[in-house]
Length: 175
Image (cartoon, rainbow, N blue to C red; front, side, top):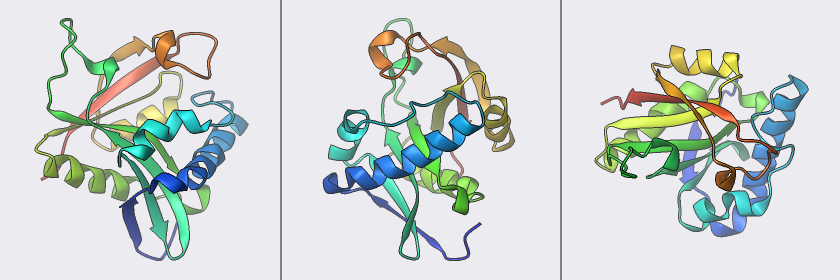
C-alpha cells in the first residue's frame, strides 16, 4: 500500500515506455501465478491507439508511476445484435497496478466512475479472463455484476493462439 496521495493524469504520447513497463510488470506477476490473461510482454501497438488519443492514463504517487489504465468509450465486446453500442458506458481496459501499490484499485475505480460520469455516461464496463477467479471475485466485491462470458474474436487478440473466453462485468457509476 502507498502512503502518498495519488494523481491520475492522461499519459502523454511520448510515455508509451512507461505505460508498457507497468503493464509488463503486471503481466509477469500474473504469469508467476499461472494466469494467462495478458501477453508476457506488451507491444507498443497494443497501447498506441489509446495513448495517442488521450484515453491512456497514468497514476502517480510521489515521483513514481504506480498504475495505468485505458478508458475507452466503445468496446466491440458490448455491442448489441445490430452492432450498436448503447452509449451508456465507459470501458476500462489494461488496468494494472504495480504490486508495491496494491490496495489502490478501488480508489482508482472510483476515480474512473467520476470520469465516466463527467462524460455523461452512467455505467462502467470491463472484462477479464473468465478463468481468473480471484480477479472476478475482486470485481464482484467492488460492485460489478457479471454480464456473461464471450469469446474475444481473433481479430482483437494479438497475444493468444485461440479466442480467449472473457467475463464481462458492469456497474453503475457512483454519483
